[in-house]
Image (cartoon, rainbow, N blue to C red; front, side, top):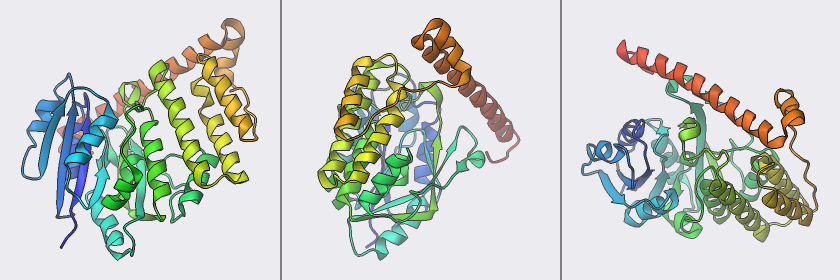
Length: 341
């Protein structure tokens, strides 16, 4: 029998893009699929938009706002799939993404093989998505994958993965203490990777990762709750890796991982900075204070680190807004002219 693939979508205040995301799930060429959307107490029109898609293959579930991890856990409790496709409410799958990965899965001798794919950034126009290969875009062992990721401070979008039910059960549930901002999926897939017997990269399968700006769940900014969630996720992931490989290379990769995220805590959360310095020291490393570029160094000298950090965040937000406004305008023009985005 053709394996059933469950596409699980947590949604919270995703009104601008949830319809496009669901259409990318419904349009998958893999024939045997179910789509489960869990609305996590949205206060905009997300739920009413989602309900228009309700059908035999699209189930809509609602719950009070409990966070993205709780929504994902709820979706998994309901689903019946042999394989799991996690999909955030603003990202898109290429039409044959799942089919390409299932072709490889059905040839595999193990249900513990974890399947990954290519992914690219976009804002509104998928035709402008940038697919930039990294050293993670190949077949790797679990330990090698995690070491490379932290040595080079690389990212893998959550939707790239296709996970068997056996491996999903082995990884366990999403940690509801984590609040997004790259904290929840990194920790979860760290467990999934270590529970796997290896990663198979499927280059022809593609995911479109939307950069939604400061209003997105993945944006951390200066939110103390998200910073504390990030700190917890970092501690958990380092613990996961060291529990199976505490080699010199793994410890060095962990130190580099900490260094890469340090600017998020500096200078506002000196309490966490000190704990990260102690953690790095226990790993045999030493952290360097984050250095601002020349654009903000003069602000730091005149007004202090906090002012320089705020200037940097404000500039990045303004730049993101300008890029998003331009891309939205071009996207709208193409749609008005009946062209593909």
